[in-house]
Image (cartoon, rainbow, N blue to C red; front, side):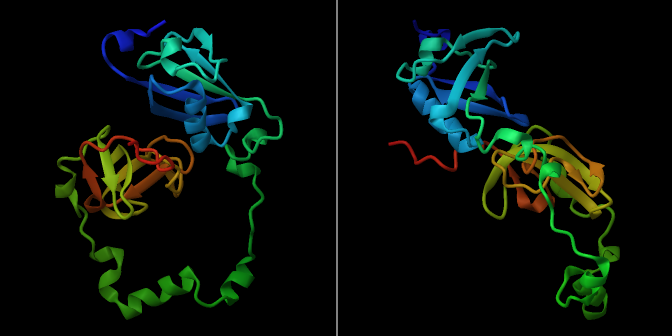
Amino acid sequence: MASRLQMEGDDSVLLHVTHSNFKTFNADVRFSLQMSVEAVKDKLWKKCGTAVDSMSLELYDDAGSRLALLSDNSAPFGFYSPLNGYRLHIVDLDPSSITSGGWLDDTSLVQKYEISEEDYEKRQGTFRKFKEKLPHQNPTSTSAKVPHNYMENLCTNIKVGDRCQVQPGDKRGVVKYVGQAENLGPGFWVGIQYDEPLGKHDGMVRGTRYFDCPQLHGGIVRPDKVQVGDFPERDLFEEDEI
């Protein structure tokens, strides 16, 4: 049974992926229709941590109706007739999986190290001590010297929804915010949702929400670090195809 995409000559499909153990996990991932179901699971394992042997895949159409359970690991993915915009749902069958319990999804469940204010003040070389010395060592470095419209001109060609690449590290993602962020400093900033968990937050910074994205996929940088263009999602864990 060939999918409509195959009959039209397209050999890949872009699906929305969700996970049974992650409330915030959602990603748009492109799959080759020639891949086996097992290869699809292997690709998803590298993104979510659910082992291939413990993974069950369900295919839903764009109306939310379940179309198929991908039960044959040897079958080509195109056998199940996925179309662009359909949802592929990962069910983790292992009760002891690293994805269970919600601690990867909800960082409030993770016990955090805390230090008393008194002990922190006794430490040398802390960021607080650095900030206290900075105005005396380099007065021109204070935020008061940064104009209100700093780097506004660089935002002219950066729009929400643009694919982009961010330096340093050639990190790829989607522009989610362009504008000022006074609690970060004067001037203009660009909010990014990275394709991989290479960020520091979920779009909320210092108590202000600038955009929404999965936890650890968000970053806010200056516009000069952002290049927009044709930067498709790439799997950092996969080897280049031959």
